[in-house]
Image (cartoon, rainbow, N blue to C red; front, side, top):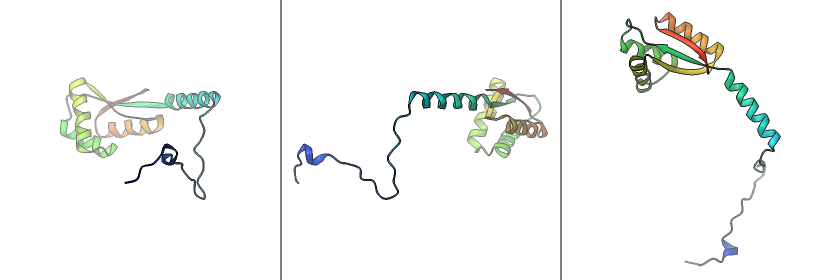
Length: 118
């Protein structure tokens, strides 16, 4: 085992061909622009909400959530239990047009669903 002095133990990253230096910290103006862009993007998001009803079986609601959203059994069951216990569940947050398609599909399966802006 060899001992190294402090000057020998410093490691430097060597960039290979085609590699770039990591980006520097953004300026305050760049951070502000990025923040505004993120806020605008979030303003365009909508919550898709499924509401409890006395008609549909819990297993059917789980099936529909799996089929429409591609959720696994555990996640779909968790959302269904929120609907059952709390009266509603936010099943996804998405862009308005996509949310409207989800609402139409949920209605076609006989589930009560609405959208509200995030």
